[in-house]
Image (cartoon, rainbow, N blue to C red; front, top):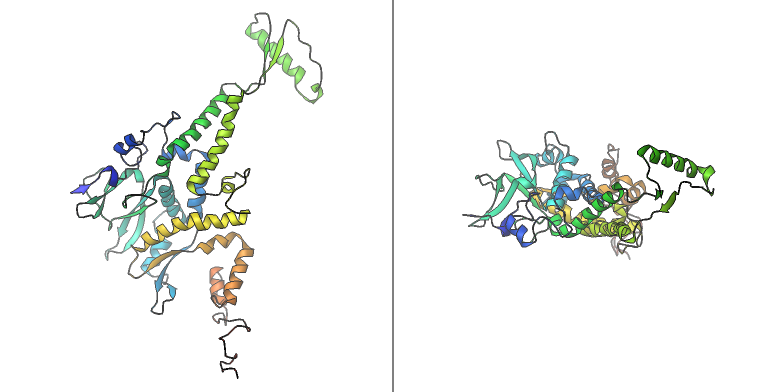
Length: 400
């Protein structure tokens, strides 16, 4: 018997709230209080949501990912490029690039709370390809013996972890992640409603500069002619500060935005902060630099906080789940955060220098990270001359 109840379900369909219709009724259905429907695709149409998802998914997808093996000495060593795990991580899909695949996977995790990958195996049972599946097509649950199973497109065939790689985001039932878009749909609905309200405000002509009125009934041609004359008299630099004479009882009324209508601008600004908070992205990365932030005292500190408190959690989720399918064991996946230094040559140089001075990297290892070949003597490690084992000299003899 398989349990696919709301507690253990994950139908992340744009037409179904949270994970099932029952849960949707429990949390108020599809339409939010602002009178709009909120789905993952519709939320992505908000510029702040698009930027937040893009910056998290794109940043992690751009980081190097490699397979490593723990040696008997406890040291971490990368596997050879010919190793099955290395081949899988380097070319996970026949036509999608490594970046494109993981950007898609992370987008599913961030918006739907779950990402699913079809595992294509070779004759020896090793995973050789990863095929992303849209979260709306999958449903996850547990059997009576607590085995995790999946159903694709509402089919009757139950798939298990040998066929599906499930990457859940934050959740509360131990089976699936929850969609942040569904949980925060009221706030996102307010942002969507404010955007629609602003579009209607501008589109309805409510922001016209003024109204030109007369006491006479004008034909359409006469009205157009009066408008042309008015525009000619008041437009252009030469007409600035000039006195305009109106005849035939014409009267000009200046228009302005009603205070109530103008408040939607403040509402939209507030929703940017709400979206930044929801996705854990510093406001400056959403191009919002107007307010003082508590992320840090400067942009650099905010960026460090973004890596530590936001990117790191997504990276660990992917590494631990991905390591389960790499073979032959024991091999694990590792995403190199130092790849973020690629765009900053000064920080990259300082990092290399510190690692070289500590003896952690030798010349060839640094050159390999810069995609350069080895050099004679590049495999030698050095230590500062003023450092050594306490009580010994440079030749290793004990001090007198």
